[in-house]
Image 1 (cartoon, rainbow, N blue to C red):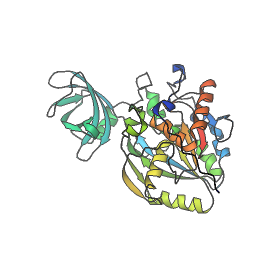
Image 2 (image 1 turned 135 degrees about the vertical axis):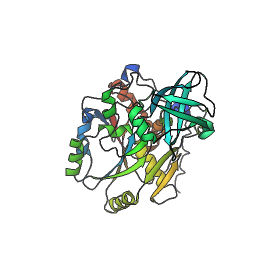
Image 3 (image 1 turned 180 degrees about the horizontal axis):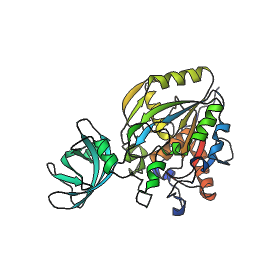
Image 4 (image 1 turned 60 degrees about the vertical axis):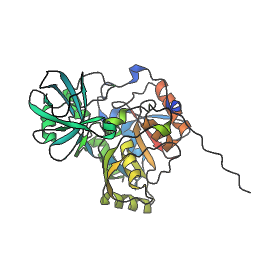
Length: 351
């Protein structure tokens, strides 16, 4: 008689909390992208490496999948035209017809029909509230929002980075292969890749493919619900193209592994396989990956270190195993790894 499998552990939000010394939160990127540290977490014991070693840890025939989203200069400063009250906007979504959805911070929320002047350069009309639970504001810009943001916006650095955006951030809070504008946060695991590493991967026989997922501000939000099941996941736009599906299918057939550069790539790929088989698709995803999730596409993961109680920490715990990931986080803290967007990386394999 076969032994009956034990019931999977039920995790609570508190299981994904950890103590992080504030000085380990990276405020600036490493001098060189690939000079960041890489915690190799594939084995029973952690191995401390440097990111530029990654090509030697993969095999010829593997496929590395990136998120090719491009971070837009989504933060704007302005004032209500009628009262002069200060307004800060973070554009979350660019829509057709010169319209956007944005987070607005003001002493008093602007009403529909009011006008906000941004950067002392252009006026935006407030159309009303929008988005999930009407948490965002629907605005109409006078011209192409992407052009206006590029001219007058600021790099939307995460809330845990204390300095205002600088010239260096415009280059370093962007991947070297960013192509499709729309993200308000970088796919941070991919920030470590530079041209030298990409060339070394190619020379090692590791192929490349891309997906797009426009990362939203919700990626920084901790789970505040009393239970994991009670958390409402934010929605993000993604696309997995036919070429990428074909590359993954061919890699699988040849015995290669699918390596995701970052959790946003995982979310895009696993969203495209929700119905069973991986298929080309685009649209919104609110996929919430927690321990017990059945991964269908990704075999290995390059990822940064994530916020306590965050959905991303739950995702990597689902991928590599809760005990393994939390042990790696303890090692990272003890070994003074740098955390979050400008921090170091780790390499995981699917449990």
